[in-house]
Amino acid sequence: MKVLIKNGRVIDPANELDGVQNICIADGKIQHVGDAPQGFSADVTIDASDKLVMPGFVDLNASLREPGFEHKATIESETKAAVTAGYTSVCCLPDTKPILDTSSVVQLILDKADAAGYAKVLPLGALTVMLEGKTLSEMYALKQSGCVAVSQAPNNNINNQVLRRALQYASTYNILVVLKPEDVVIKDDGSIHDGAISSKLGLSGIPVSAETVAIAQIIELAEETGARVHLTGVSSARAVTMIARAQFTNKGISADVHAHQLHLTELDVGTFDSNYHTSPPLRTVEDRDALIAGVVKGVFSVSSGHQPHENEAKQAPFPSTETGISSIETVLPLMLKLVADGLMDLTGLVKCLAYGPSQILDLDVGNLSAGSVADVCIVDPQEQWLVSEESLLSRGKNTPYLGHQMTGKVTHTLVNGRVVFGK
Image 1: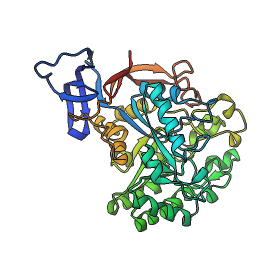
Image 2: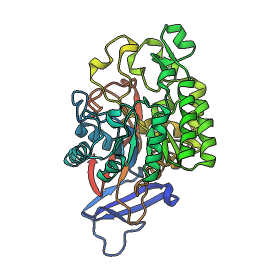
Image 3: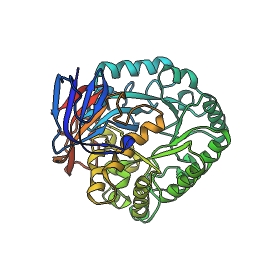
């Protein structure tokens, strides 16, 4: 199918584009950016006047729940929600049931994503067998089966001796290792940020050191082994400084922050609403501001940290509820709010949602170069919509943004040149 996207404001940091252009697509690839070449006849024409045309977003951290937790969500439901939010590629965490530590589970996930026909699913294989932190998984076999990286997330229950051996193994085969920087011993039974709010509410706190101690250890081991390491879900100002310093000398260190961490803080937890029970916890205003600065400076990419849950998972005393937000559908408007507030520009938005993540994963997506895969999203930056259980396509309705008015909505998403979402 040949597709012409015309009159849109094309924003593509990879090619330093920001202006009104046409995009010609054929055979699943970008054929041309600019005036349509002579003889190009489109089967589908999309008028993107007054809209933004961007590379499809790449999510570095999401739980799709299937296989094993279909009562929470499925690959079909979450990839459908993803494309309506501009995501064309989604990394899925390995905490499925069975654990994503064998080639057969990888193939099952890829087959289900292919059958759904929405966003591409990029599996993160388990770093250790059963995610138990004891025995190394067959990382090379997982990579050969289609995993873009290996990960111990969403937990970090692995001692440094095992982690060092894992990083040595990964370095040998140039396998990216995705880690959640969290010392589970320091974290203990904490449920929110350790500070004034935790004291006021009488809840056990999670100190910043639970994150920074883990980061220091991971950076040191990455330096020693030469492994490529990505730190996912960073939450503190101190971590920004540590990671920026590490990146100055080691280009193999990358990191992301969840979009909601750029807006919400510990102050939002005051009502005991379990939809604010997140991991990592929401931290201080100063931490939030430092994270925003880190994104603007290119220290971080931005992920969704998408964690869909059934209603019952959030219906218990705050510390006993399951952590996480169903967040993939609110990432774009939250990032556009930072643009509207003058904290970043649209080029920076595309860098942290598309181009940056694609570079971390070493994939030829996240750009609109001629010859590249035609993963594209078209955004109406002025469209307003209400976050409600009806408007969210994800199975998970667990978001603190229910009832909030958002600005910015995807109108079309193309995956491999095929329109998988369009109004």
